[in-house]
Length: 246
Image (cartoon, rainbow, N blue to C red; front, top):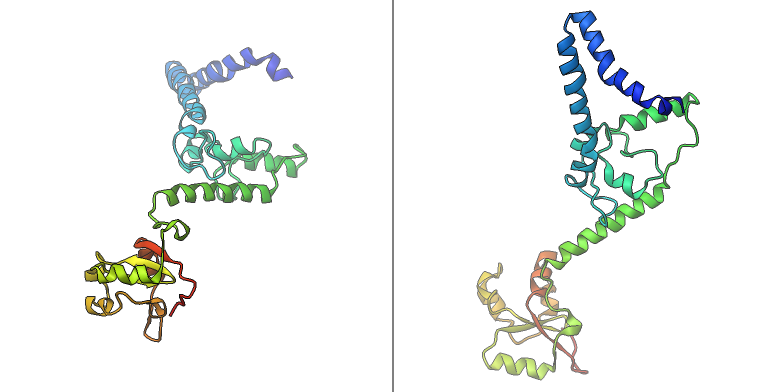
């Protein structure tokens, strides 16, 4: 290609000679043209360009993949004229776009799209939308799983020690503050004083099966937050074959 063969000549003409001569002839400032319009302008453009290999791997989020370091960041996209949506570019390199949504700043994408409309570009590659959405969904799942690992969910029911209902009542007789909900024994000793319905109301059901009462029982159905809190108090599961939840 002609521009590749003449690259060095074109480089000096466009980067140094033309800006210097233009400022000299138009403003009688050859020195300013060389320093500001050539050297400093070129320096700033190079810094912005190479933000793609620095900031675009450090600032922002990773909505499509996290195996490598590239990230998406609207601010970096402003500096690099669209190259800031680097996470998408690395995950779907065949796609001509960086910012795939209409509102994402990517002038190169818009220019190529316009070229396609006037037959100056053709056969533009667009990764299937379903696979893009699939990648986003999988990344959200990974991020949620990492968050899940930081949350206490209580001991899984199938990992709890097995008690008979008799063992449960015996522990209550020995002074433990326990109650059963959904076939699971919960230690509510540290929660009694914080029960929104009052300490007395909760103590009345110690040693009993409070399943029906917890889930409404015609009085008050507990919220999802209450169920989550209760799950952190599990200590055992009832395995009596003749046990029936009340």
